[in-house]
Amino acid sequence: MLLVLERLAQGDGSTALGLGWHLGIVLNERTERRWPDHIWRALAEAIVKNGDMINHYASEAGTGSPSRGGLPHTRAVPAEDSSKNDSRKNASEKTGWRLYGRKTFATLSPILRHFTVTARIDKKVEKNPTSPSTDRIGDANDRTDGVIEQPGEAIGRFFISLPEAPPVLEQFIDTPEEAIFDPDNPDVWIIPTWDTLGMRATGSHDVVLNGLFVPRSALIECTYPASKKESAKSQTISDGWLLHIPATYLGIARAARDFALHYARHYQPSSLTQPIGELPHIQTLIGTIEEHYRTARTVLYSTAAHWDRSPQQSAHLAPDLGLAKRFVIANSLAIVDLAMRIVGGQSLSRSRPLERYYRDVRAGLHNPPMDDTVLLQLARRALDEI
Image 1 (cartoon, rainbow, N blue to C red):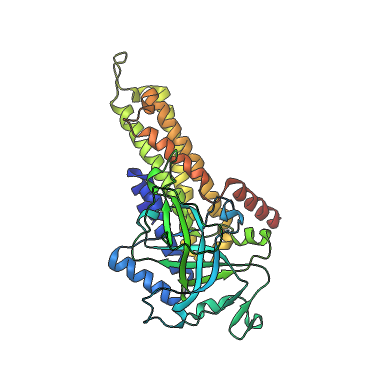
Image 2: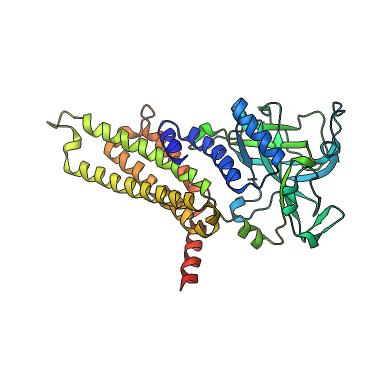
């Protein structure tokens, strides 16, 4: 997977990152098998037959990064499906929740029919009668009469499957603040907010949920973070599938490297009798690029190989996975910067790709895990080993 994404990112980083989220989610579920079987089968069939994709929408403007334990403001309100075409639905499909809220950084949202979202729900959640896998919530002593009870507020993850991707509404409509369904507006839509420095083609707009109905069978899982501290702990980045992030940015850096090498090999100003690639100070820059690229690639793929050998030990590998991301991003930033130094002032021109590589690669700083989280994980492990 990483090889494909690194190669794809050399052509377009946004495409690689979007595909990486899709492939990573599928890989993670195939490894962990945490989803209810009927949801997994439906998604797998849509992917194989229709080429559909999926992503997970968790971020919200007012909650901070989910990787830091931010709890969603999006609400799941118990409801019954009021649609007219419900004669074929069983009980688990007629009852469920209506979702109200607004998700940010919803990558690929203009083209996705399938996605998952997180939302706050009542702390008492009925067991999904069609999916034994949700019985993992709590233990047998916590359940009475088909109801799972845990202390604190419940956070549910829901699987959304739509007939087509949500509409993009150019005219702004206020996000519903109260759980009151507004029939004059769609039950889900996209606000085209993605206007960024880099990675502009990921389509990471805002998605508004305006009373979108989801049946009980759409509940994937629940967590019960009793405190923000426990929530942050539960959100620790420890899954190898997230290595798609550094693979993408390393691919962008590789593209900058290749452009600079081609430029140095062929560009010969009138003041020189040979291309600039023959100059010692340019070769020093090229050598430094190679140092950054080859060490970063070694760290990335050796970490991935370690995870492949023992994916069930991903929690133990969390510091190494985070370190790989941090290390690769730092080196990718350095590679693009050095490539621009080789090309000089012409690297700033929009007619050349280096300015796009420069903008795109910086987005890696804001993908999880964050640097301080990685360093804390490394420090804790080091102290525990003494």
